[in-house]
Length: 211
Image (cartoon, rainbow, N blue to C red; front, top):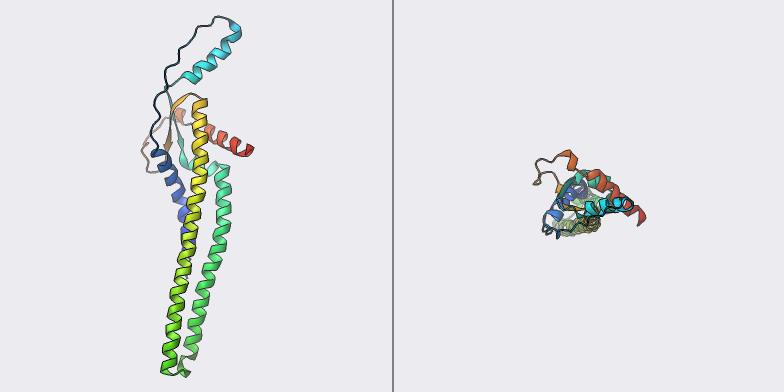
């Protein structure tokens, strides 16, 4: 029989995360431009590097984007979350399959003995089978709901971490705006020189490793 929980995890790991990632950031209002920073002319060579660093942070015209699929596929926190989620899904799938097998076994037993039963006994057994079918369906639906809720919790936890880290990266590197490029999203084209997926991913994994 078909395993509905397997359909749930396939949808989660292939499509839903990337879409939620895009919507998560797309729903956030664009930050207002930072107030202009007044540059101070310093002529001494010993402080030239400090001046250059200040000007980089003060640059409010920098705009870049990251590719959501590459970012999430390479983010170790997402890999760990998926692994933990898959372990739970295997357990739920086993419970789901057990419910189906129990019902099929009861039906087969009834079919084998139906000829020896009276009409009243057959009616009573069929009623019991119907009640078992309904109860089993409710238990399977509960397992699917549990899987969906766990997927939502896992996704939110990872995206919240990404949100904070990308914001910190943007502020530290003087970006006015960092956009999210996702399948079916609003960014149809972006120059590769403003694609900072690799840099942001390295920053995310470094922060997660320190966690």
